[in-house]
Length: 317
Image 1 (cartoon, rainbow, N blue to C red):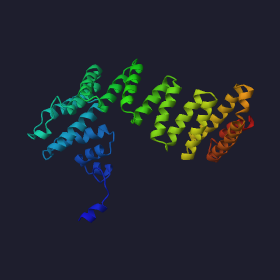
Image 2: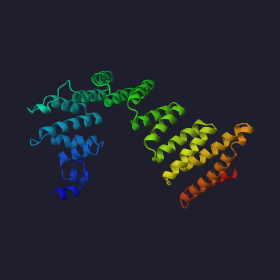
Image 3: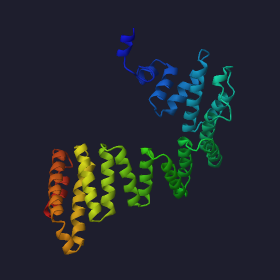
Image 4: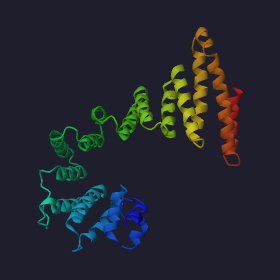
C-alpha cells in the first residue's frame, strides 16, 4: 500500500550491501550500487561488467549505462582495448530504440572519447574534444575541469593548470573541491596569501569543518606577522572547538600562540604595549593546549616526549 511504501527507506540503488551483491554474483546490481554510491572501483566494475555484457536478457537502457560505466572504469585501469570496444558498442548498438542511440556528435559520446584519449596520453586531441564541448556549452563544468586535469597531468605546465583552474572557478565559484585543489597548488609554490584566500572560501562553504579551519590556521601561521598569527590562533581555536580530538589543531594552536609571542617581540615597544592583552591570551593558550595534549597522550609511548617538548614551551613563557 501507499502507507507501507512511505515507511521504506529512500535508498539509492540496490538495498543490499556491496559484499552481499558480490557474493551473490549479482553483476547488474553491483554496477548499479557502484553508480548510485559514486564509488571508484574500476577493477570491480570491469570484472562484473564483462560478465554482465554477455547476458542476453540485459535491457537496452541498462546495457548502455553499463557500457558507459565499464568504458570509464577501463580508462581508469589503463585497459584501452576494452574502453575502445565499449565506445564502439555505444555508437553501434544492437537495439533499434532511437531514444537509446548515441551519435558521435553527442556530448555523451564526446565525453567518453576524450577520456579514452586522456588515458592513451593523447592530451592534445582530448583537449580539442573538450574545446568543442565548451563551444557548444560555455558553462559545461565537466569539460572545463577535465581541461585543467589534462594540464595538471603534464610536467612543466603547472602555471597553465593553475590559470585554467582559476578561470574555471571564476565561472563556478561554488565548487569547493576546486577551491581545495587550487589552495594546494598555491601552497606548492609557497603562495600563502593565495592559499589563505582559497581556504577562506572553503570556510564559507564548510564553516563547521574542523580540518579546513586547521589548514587555514596553519597557512596564516606559516605566513608570519602579528596579524596573521592572530588569525591563525582564531581558526585553530575554532578547529579544536569543533573537534576536541583534532590533534593537529591542538599542536597548531600551541605553535600559533608561540609564533604570536615571537612576532610581538620583533615589533617596536609602542606597538608591543598594544598587544599586552593578546600576549596574556597566547600564554594561557600555550598552557591550556599543553595540558590537553598531555592528557591525550597520557599512558602512551609518546607521553614522555610530548611532556618534555611542552614543558620546554611552558618554561620559556
